[in-house]
Length: 397
Image (tube, rainbow, N blue to C red; front, side, top):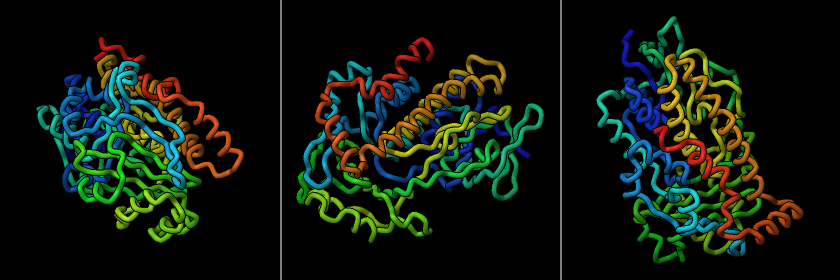
């Protein structure tokens, strides 16, 4: 049994590393346990709204992240069959003035690398790899975690940031991830490979929407790569091998030629079957708590999954400053974060239903609302993007 730090973070993804940065600012030592052989991030692009940038700014990494990012001019919804613009949101000067931060897109690995390098510069953060943590148990003032080999490590507290299939969540509640029946194929390609054959909107984040499917496109890594995400509802979601490339091809038949062309560049080797979690009313047991997807895994439709983990990380650090005991700090943290994240979880599900509508009446109502939306009407996103700045004054950081 090895005592490694004041706090152990189980999971070295975006949420776990952001939490390590936030917690180390309290003066406490942190050990991050990652199950992969090395620290890194899989996937493709990620969208970061102003509430994410506000956290990254306070953690001291915003300017470095901006070096790898693209700042789009608009968010655009297009009909997947006609290419008609259904609604737009202007992300320019007015948007940044309203929310105090820009909206950016970048490669997930770039965001993860910046967070990891920032953590490496802190002497009170340590890293452990090849660690698939199975359990966590508190005895007195000590929490013990056990890895896949039966090895044990101890600390004063543990934060479970181990994703949608979290083992740490199992210590608190016996539930299962919820199968949405949607599957995603995502990846990036060098911009020069598509620039000559596709009429790309390099200034915008484009979401092509249709009944039970959509595709998202935007540039990342300073405009050097083009990110594409294809999502569709699988009618085979009850079988183990669901959401196949063959089904994707069938689902996108007769879509607009630009979408058809984009599909030819999609990597079909990897797919993400999309799950979320039902909200729960408690994340904490003594000196053990949850963060990010382990607490509130959500569907991707609002591009808030990683963002909400960043919000978690900042609030957790703040509450550890304010309270002497870990249990008090964790309870105060979840009192704020559970209602907020549950609201976003529910909103993501509802937004998915809106963009994927297939009933003619629902489609007509949706398109009527879209037609009357103004590109500079920021009230519709204030509940997401304005929340963090409004609720956490700069004096708190």
